Length: 366
Image: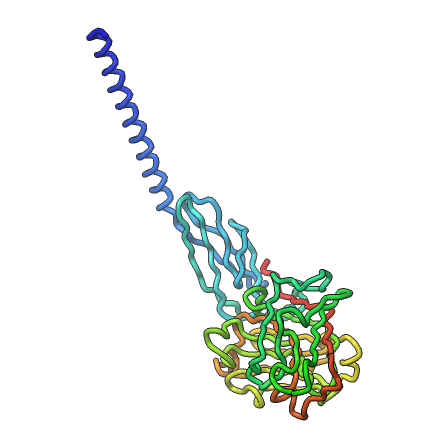
């Protein structure tokens, strides 16, 4: 190799190295520019109300800087309408609205409080079906329900062992909860049944709830369609609140109860009423509840047939912890402090609670 060739080779290598450093430097500068642009992201939105439409708020995304997408956070839901949205708030009081904006490398969120000045008188008419189960499949939907299991009395000295699905069937579009006798001892574990709930899977706040069911019968039966506050694990019962849409005890045939349990009154001191319903063991009826921030209305078959209304005033944490999501429970117990008040008649078993459908209605956000 000649000296000139060697020199040229070194020169080319040096130039390539310089070119490489230059490329890296350019990429570094571009990265700084991108980060600088991203860091300049300012998240903001405008909320306008119209006195003629006091329950609707016009929301406009006013964020500046480079971003890819944005979501609104309204009434415990995430709405993907990034730029503009007319949101519906059916109840008066302070409402929180959030906007989350996704930048190139980061994200930011802003929350604002708005004041809604009145309740919407047309709230009930605006309710829309948001979830239903018609039980048309072959098995219970495990994306919606969980089996609660055990024979520990469930706080009420109940006698059944709740099984992991062995006492539940779906047939002809109906959910069947079967309660069976295992022996004649009338002690914990002498009966088997099912208790299913929607905790952590289907939880709701406010709206209208309807469950169409035919009830079991006989002394010792305690059937229930009810809801518990989703925060029960952190605050316990009755601080979480309990809403009994329907309870039936077999020693009191042709009668259904609706009751509210809160720290101000629970267990035997719960706030409730009952109604005679002669065909509840033979026919299907719709057991319903309308839940708003101010009251609960329990009814059978229609809102005109009210069983009980609960509307304490003034409200506080003791009489109204019912301002957060709750989950649904369906179960049939044997005996217990109320269901077994007049004993258990072992000749009635097996018994079944049949449920044709579950429906939840809530107000649409937009």
